[in-house]
Amino acid sequence: MESLKPVRGTQDILPDESRLFRRVEETAFDVADRYGFGEISTPIFEFTEVFTRTLGDTSDIVTKEMYTFEDKGGDMITLRPEGTAGVARAFIANGMQQNLPLKLFYRGPMFRYERPQKGRRRQFRQVGIEILGVATPQADIEVISLATTFLDELGLKNNITLELNSLGDAESRAAYREKLVSYLSGHKDKLSHDSLERLDRNPLRILDSKDEGDIAIVSNAPRLQDSLNETSQSFFNELCGGLSKLGVDFEHNTKLVRGLDYYCHTAFEFTTTDLGAQGTVLAGGRYDGLIGQMGGPETPGIGWAAGVERLTLLLGEGKEAKRPIVVIPVGGEAESEALVVTEMLRKKGYRVDLDYSGNLKKRMKRANMLNAAAAILLGEDELTKNVGTLRDMDSGEQKEVSLETLEDHLKVYK
RNA sequence: GCGAAUGUAGCUCAACUGGUUAGAGCACCGGCUUGUGGUGCCGGGGGUUGGGGGUUCAAGUCCCCUCGUUCGCCCCA
Image 1 (cartoon, rainbow, N blue to C red):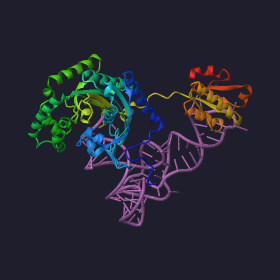
Image 2: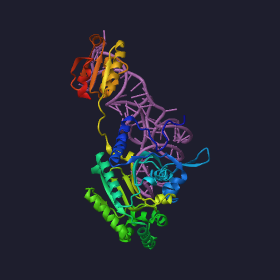
Image 3: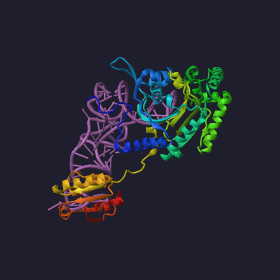
Image 4: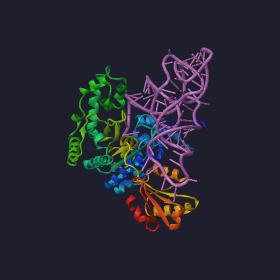
């Protein structure tokens, strides 16, 4: 065996940690459900074209981060690097435009060939939502307030801030892009190497540069919001107004941008300073051009995705699992009776564990390790009297109770 | 893809400028306690020091390569 280690950037998620993952995903689904979203599952791999068409040939995701391979039938297949493309594809393929507007929730693993870091894996999980078919800011408001509720219910409200910006409609963006490029072109000699490359590929990104020289240049650059036409401006105003009315706090970050062409109007990110360089915990925006670009009917869309790993890193320990009751048979004869009692209690809804082996001391120790609330001892003495010894694991008090009325005594532990 | 740090027991870490059989705490197993855990005492198992190569009389320690992790950049959730 070459190595038993998992492939770089992948990880085993053991039961304790799984609980956190489940909490994040279930909270997300639960909230989305209340907001009227239905769950959609799309394949975790698609024809490569699905992603190259939606993400554009020049984006980093496509040029260097996709897990792409040829399958045995000769098709080019890619492990999905994000969720929206698959949802959009499924939308078109299933003729879902009949049912607009649509509110969809998804969750599952995504794959990106990147250098792993804290909060960044090659296989990672996302939860996300999309609203399709609503061109007005109502959808933007709903999607963002859903995100806020979700993060609130995870108890993360205090660590996370919402940054919001408008990219404007296609016309406004094109106009701004032109202004920005012509301004920046006058400073080519001073731009950082990275930004120089971004200049023709993705100039808006330069606004976001961390290079000090770039920041100085950008500070005098024409501003995005000055290029917004009337439609775009009122769209954004309506969004901000709606959020305020719902009590959603946000910061208008005029440097927040999205690279791809089909993005428009709303862009937002929920960020934290607790995760080093991977500060973005949930992000999304409006993508009115996407479905049309894929060959479907022109359909407006907006949505977000959140990184489950990053959220679990912020959660810490979290709530304890429900404490079990442990049934402890003493002596071989009690084993089968213990099994009966255990099954009976399980079917009545108790969380019950049965110790398999060892002397009483060992089994008690194990019950303690399991953080049991109570232990039920079944030995020869008990069996002849048809009782069980019920021990409260916190107080240490114990009493014999008849097996018929056992459940009444357990209600406190349920 | 680029730059840097790091890698010793299941976990957290120790081992002076290279120098005998690599230690400790926690965890685990056993005993004190043959039907009673969470505290105590005694004992035990555990490591090709991430892997490979090199320098040296001698390498956990120095050098090279490789793999993993972490941090930053790029990018993103």
